[in-house]
Length: 257
Image (cartoon, one colour):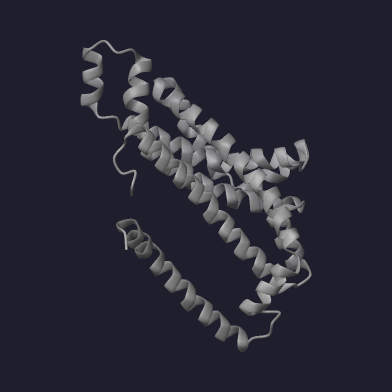
């Protein structure tokens, strides 16, 4: 077996073993519990297969909201990080403002936002971006500040401009931190999407969770929860793949981690 195959097997074996043990424990526990409280794995799978189109439609709606919220939050977060690094007044304004917005929970902000602007997908995207902006901003600021002083001195000695310094040294050095913030933001974008959909009760995976719970369709509720978990893992995985591509493109150590 190749080295890549051995590495893949080492990564997959522990989670697969945990999954099999959890599945076995779940099967035993569900056999001794009322189905309305704890349906078995087979019942959950049947609930999913009964109407896979409904799950696909819900995933599509939630994906638009999560991706839009992550993209908007990342754009705002990176912009704020650049402003913070570029000037002392910017730093004095950006960091307290970002922290203040993040401290306020989404459930406290959402009712006012919905009252002002409605409950459509664009509004939900804005709400999700509130959650994703914070990790991207903080991680990017830390990364941009971590540029080795020796590199900056070397470029300064040869008369490099601020833009050349930023493009060739600051940004590549900050990429690991930036992507750490993006991966956290990817996970938070899924959480924010589900919360926004639960608050609006309009479609998506969150809406499916509400409908299943309201009518005590427990097996369907479990199916939605599993789909949400896989959806979140997928979002995080995409961010990790983009990170690997970017770090290889810039030749940064640790791309294989």
